[in-house]
Image 1 (spheres, rainbow, N blue to C red):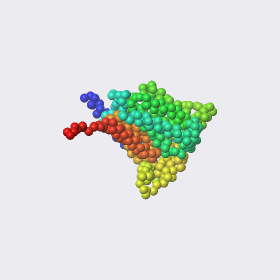
Image 2: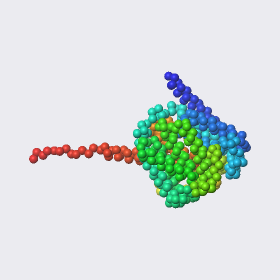
Image 3: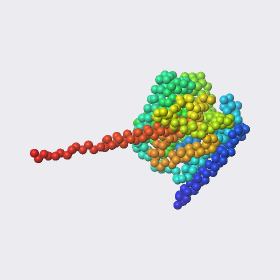
Image 4: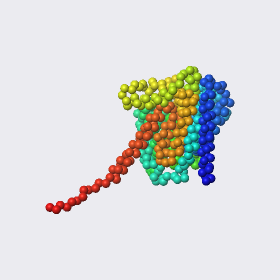
Length: 474
C-alpha cells in the first residue's frame, strides 16, 4: 500500500509540475515582445540558471541515460552552453570571436535565449505530463539474456553499421581520394557535397545500426560492428564530423541503458570528460585536418566545448531578428515542405523546385542568408508559428520522448530509439526537413527485416510430406 501511495504521489507531482511549467511557458510566450531586450550578463545569468534547473529536474526524474534525459542534456549544450559559460565568467565577452559578439551581444541575442528557455520549459512540461500518466517502465531489474539480446534484429543492425562505413569510405575515396581522410573539414564538405543525399542516409544507417547492434545478441558480429564504429570515429572526428559520431553514440548508450546495461558513474564521468576534450580539439584540428596537426597549437579548456556547441542559439537569434524586422510567419510551410516534396517524387503532375532553391527548407534559407550555421527546433517552430508555436512544438517533442521511455516492451523501445530517437537527436542542430524521411526509411527497414525473418522461418519450418504409398491390388 505504501508503494502504491508513493506512486500516486509521484504521478500527482509530475502532473502538477507539468501543468505549472506549461502555463509558465505559455504565459511567457504570449508576453514575449517582438522588439529586442537590452542585453547584459545579468540576463544571461538568470536564463542560464533557469535552463540548468530545467535540465537538472528532467535528468533527476528520468535519468541521464533515458531518451528524455539525454535529449535534454544535448539540447541544453547546444542552446545554453555558450550563454552559461559567458554568464559564469569563465570567458569574457571580448574573448568571443567578432562573429559571436555581433549576434549574441546584439539587440536580439537575449530574445533568442529567452525563447529557447521558453521552449525548454515547454519540453519539460510535455515530458512531465506523460510521466504522470503511469509508472515509468524500468527494465534494469530484469535485464535481457545476453545470449538473446533485447530483440532479434541485432545481426541486421551490425550489417547496417558495416554497410554505412563502407559507403562512407567509398564516397570519400571517390570524391577526394585518400587525402579526404586526413584533410580539412572545408575540403571534405566541398567534395562530399556531390553525394549529399547519400550521406544523410549513411549517417542515419550508422545511428540506427549501432543502436540495434549494441542491444542485440552478443557475438563476434556485434563486437566487430562496435569495433568498426570506434575505428571510424577515430578517422571521422579529426575531419570535423562531431555530430555524426556523437549522436549515434548517445543513442546507443540510451538504448543500452533501456536494456539495463548502464555506464558506471566513473565511466560516465570519463565519457563526459572525453567529450569536453574531443569537441574543442576537433574544432582546432578540422581547419587543417590531420595533415596540418604538427603546426596546430592546441589550447584546450573544457568549457570551450560548451562555447562551441552553444552556437546553435545563433539560428534562433536570426529568426527572431527577421520576425522583428517585419517578416511574416511561415504558418507550417517548413513542416509541410518535406511531405509535399516527397509526394512530388511519386505522384505525376505535382510541381516542385530544386531543394537548393526551396526557401521553405530552413537550412537552405539560413545558408542562403547567413551561411552554414546549422539550425534548431526552437528556431523552426518560431519561424512557423511564433513564440506560442515554440511552446506547442517543444511540448509535443517532450511528450513524444517521454512516451519512448514509457514503452513497456524492451525490444519495441529499442526499435523506437533506432527509428525515431536518432533522427530527433540529429534534429537538435538541423532543420526538420529530413526527419520524416529518416523516420520512414528506418521504419521500412525494420519492417522489411521483420517480414524477411517470418518468410525465412516459414520456409524452414514448412513440412514437405511425401504422398502416401498405395499398394496396387492388380
